[in-house]
Image (cartoon, rainbow, N blue to C red):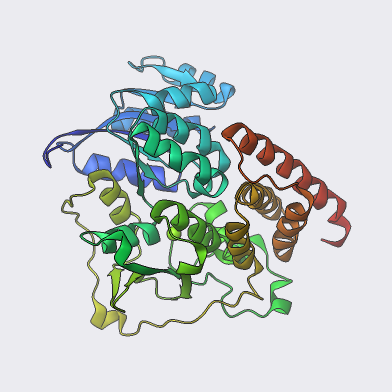
Length: 393
Ligand code: MG
C-alpha cells in the first residue's frame, strides 16, 4: 500500500483509553484514515457519542442490554449495529478492514483478535493480555493466515522502531523500561496499607484503571516481557527490565556488537498508536516535543523482584510456558477487579495469582479452546481464594 492510500481503520474497544486516543489519531488525518467499525463492551452512551462524532461505517456492542440501549438512543444510525462476541468478531474480520486496532481490555480481546488474524489483517495490538494468555496460539495463527501483529504498547513500539533495518540474528537483548509505578520506593510493610486510590495515581501515564494497577504491581511489566517474547521471538533470558522513572526512554535493543539503540519521546500513547496505524511509515503529528535539556536527568535502576513478586511470577510463567500465561492473566484480572472493589488487599493480588498458579493443572501445548477453559477455571479458583481469605483482607 502506498504511503498516501486511505486506510480503513477498525477500533475494537473504542471507548477505552487506547480506543479514544486511536479515534483522535484517525480524526486528525481524515485523508489518511477512514473509520470502519468501533466496538465497546457496555459503555453504550460513549459509543453513541463516538458514532455521532466520528461517523464509523458500523458499530458492535458486546453486552445485549448496551446494544438495545444504543439502538434506542440512536435509531437513525445508518450502518450495521452488531451485538455480542459474534458481532465484535464479525467487525474484526470484515474484509474491508485495512488495520484493526485491538484495544479491548483483558481476555475479552482474545477471540476478536483471533478473528482479525484469521481474516489475515494488519493488527495494531494493544491488548497485551491476548498474547500473555494465548500467544502460543495467536502467533502461529498469524503466520498461517498472513496476518501482521504490530505492537502498540509504547515499549514494544520502541523496540519495533529500534529494529527497523536490523537483522534478527544481530539482536542480543531487549531492554524494556518501566516507570516503576507509584510504589517504586515503598517497603513491603508500607505496601500493606496501599489503597485503590493510591494505586490509581500513576506518576507519568494516564491510562485505564486495570493497567494502572498492573503498573503499580509491575505485573504490567511482567506481561510486557511475555508480550515481547511473542512479538519478537526471543527467550525470557534475553529480555531485561530496567526501572526508568522519567518514562522518556521507552525501551532499548542491544546488538551483538554491544551497541544499544534506544527510542525516546514524551510519554504519550498517541505516537505508538499512530505508528501502528501507519507502519512502516511515519506521519507528522502535532504534539509537544521532547526537550532533553529541560528533562535534565535520565536515571535507571534494577527492579526489585522481592518487593514486586508479580514481575518474578511473569518471568517464571514465561519459562514454564504452556498454560501458565493464561493462568496468571486470569488470576490477575480477578484479583485486580477485587482490589478495585475494596475486597482484596494490594498485596493480596500477588498472593491470589501465586495460589491460582499452584492450583491449576499445567497444560504444555494448549489449543485456543483449552486457553478459554483454563481462563474460566483460573477465574473460578482465584475468586474462591479471594472469598476464602476475605477475613484477613
Ligand atoms: Mg507499556
